[in-house]
Length: 206
Image (cartoon, rainbow, N blue to C red; front, side, top):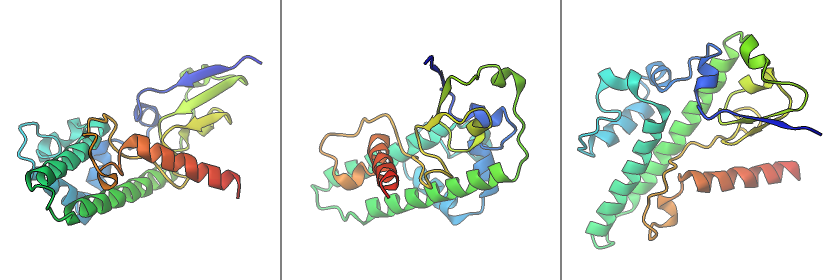
């Protein structure tokens, strides 16, 4: 049987093209007064970095999801460096606070994406529809159900907000030192992918 694979490399572009407000700017505008978003930005301000990722409120619209995720790694490295500088005597409450914050951010994001998708009547587009036939298999890097409008054959790389009830939202560059402890790599994407695979295994086997 002939299989045609369609890969979406632009993680958020597919949803945006269908009228969904799923950009970083939309998300943070929706929850601009949410204490979770405020706490995350307050942590970023501690880094004293010339790169104004998530610092300048007026540049939020230009910040991509990738930059948003990069800041998570920057915070982890910052915490790791503090631990090294302290000779290993640093109280690890900070990393637990960061992981707890990332967990809250992930749940908030999943909630936003689900509500955003359900709140809009999404129509298929002809130019995308032409890319699909009965042999198509779609690999989606998004979290929403948009791809299901075109095919029943799909795979969610980063999890589905409805099928999995779990989404991968972490940092991907993998530049953490090899001596980083488990608590420091909890939100490394490769680690989160293992968790997602295990959850899917459990679900498939009841």
